[in-house]
Image (cartoon, rainbow, N blue to C red; front, side, top):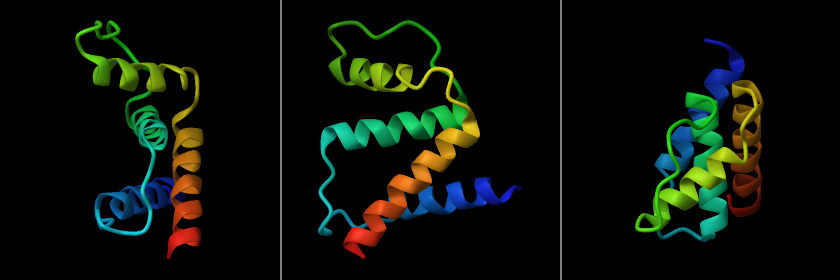
Length: 92
């Protein structure tokens, strides 16, 4: 496993285990960005049809992920790690 992959997995674990009642209250836009970076890093470019009007959450997620089309997995991992580090530095 490369160093960037390990750092990415460590950052993902920090997000998963972060207390829900902590000082950091992410906005919906921030959550969508993190979701999209994670999916781009792990799955690559978005595929499939865009969800319909009756699935607004799925549609927002799809759109956020689609904005990263063409971004390489390593670049998405680095951006995800940077975002986690910024939050950690500010709220730790």
